[in-house]
Image (cartoon, rainbow, N blue to C red; front, side, top):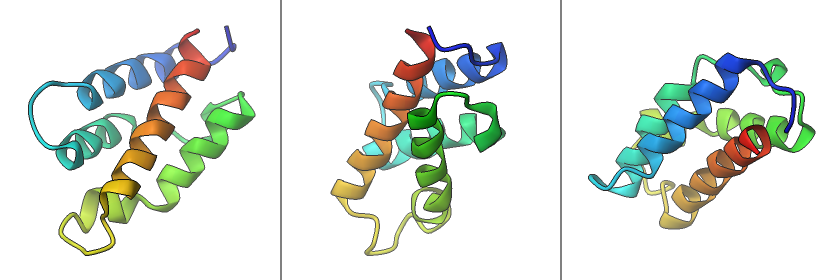
Length: 94
C-alpha cells in the first residue's frame, strides 16, 4: 500500500463512493466526487501516477465543475476524469 496520509485516503474513498453512486448522471457524479476531493493538493500524493492524475483533473476542473453545460464536456472527458479518480483511489487504497 502506498504510504499516503490518512485524510487523502478518506477523501478519495468518499469521492469514489460518490462517483459510483447509483443516482444521477455521470457528470453530476463526477462533480460530486471532485467536490469531495477538491481540498486535496498535489503535494498530498506520494505516488507519482496518483499525483499526475490529480494534477490533470485539477487542471481541467472548470470543465467538470464550473462549466457543466459547455460543449467541451464530452462523454469521453467525463469518462477520463472518472477513470483518473478511480486510479488515484486504487493507488492509495490498495
